Amino acid sequence: MNTDILRGRRLGNLNAESVKYTASTVFDTILVNPVIEINKAHMVMLVSQGIVKKSQGAKCLEGLGNLKIGDELDPILEDVHMNVESQLTKIVGTNIGGQLNLGKSRNDQVSTAIRMALRTYLLKIITNLIEFRLIILEKAEDHLETIMPGYTHLKNAQPVSFAHYLLAYVEIFKRDKKRFFNNIVNLDECPLGVAALAGTSYNIDRNFTSRKLGFKKPTLNSIDTVSDRDFVLDFLSSAAICATHISRLAEDLIIWNSDIFNLINFNDRILTGSSIMPQKKNPDPAELIRGRAGKNFGNLQAMLTTMKGLPLSYYKDMQEDKNLVFDSYDVLKESILIANELIKNLNSNKQRMLYLANKGYTTATDFADYLVQKKNLSFREAYKISGKIVDYAEKNNKKLDELSMNEIKKVKKDLNKDVMKVFSVKNSVNLKTSHGGTSIKNIKTVLSKLKKEFK
Ligand code: ARG
Image (tube, rainbow, N blue to C red; front, top):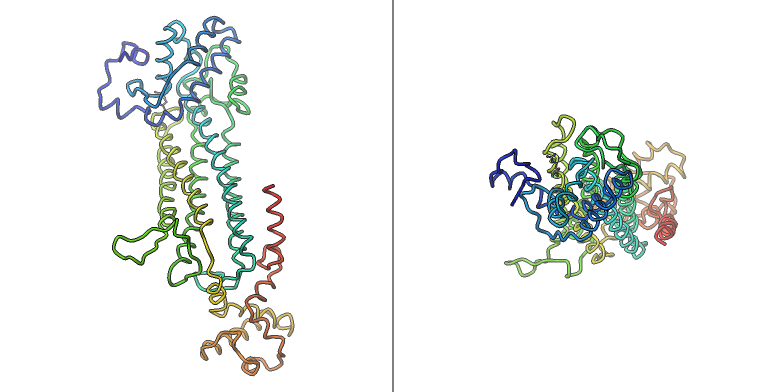
């Protein structure tokens, strides 16, 4: 292969090991289309600025339209940019193909191409998250009145509606969606035309190419432009945060599906068996969501490490960005899709949820609140009295709603029968009417608001 195009007969041949080590062709296949678009836009601009002759430009554009670049890019040409130029030159000759890099370089091109590819990825992830939120919302609708123990420190805390738990994730993924959307906003400046690092002496029109490639405006500083990979860090960081959320969801579901908790179960179609224990039904997809999140964190860490020691301007270190972006995208996209399956195939064990919601004295706070509201005590006084009743119940091996009126009166004399209802978990849930609380009434309002969002 003739590499004059890059090495200009001045450099001798690169050895095979270095070719393999330095080329970005393996990852660049994803950039083929954006790079062709970039070259077309740039050529149209060169012609309309009178920098390249119309006839030359037309042949060049025709050639670019006819390029057949498959998945195989030649590593000896280092990357997609030189593969495109080389192929085009083969079709239209050096006179015309040789004009392709006029007024631009690979440094500005690659940053433009990654932004364009990333834009598409970000839109896909946003769409996936919208679909995921809808699936969670539908599951929540089925479980409005399903009462479960709410946990803090993995200890029974207060009863909540299972729908309320699920709707927490509708909020969480709304923030993720917004974060990814902000990534699109942040990358919306076009690097094309800053050339290697200093700009160019040709009278190019960067506003034109920026507009043509769908960016809001061209970048302002050529040195910053070829040095910048903030848009990569933004995406990797959003992906890492989103992966954290999916992993936390998976973790809850794994715990609740355990034999000890047994709050939920999954349909067989997402469970795996054991090669030795015939009885086993394991939630492997959930465990792998948790396991793969590490790749998203690792990719962010790798890119931060790559960037932190670089003096300004372009260094080949930055070429590592593509692998990390594409990998994080693939991992995250699959994890979101599998998380969809977890939610779709999840069944609640309602009896068990209700039973555990009432274990661990989960209505003790409601009793304290009752004493404040009905007996005019300070919260701290009420808290102590409620603590005493928990002590009594614990010693006598009873749940709070199993105590008799006489037993309750041992702790505070002037109570009447209507205190008994505060120990009901259902009542407890319905008392939480404050904004954002778990009462069924609140959840119904939230559900109908959210459903409008999806219409
Ligand atoms: N393939 C490189 C990358 O992906 C772009 C080429 C820049 N190369 C250079 N020698 N300036 O970052």
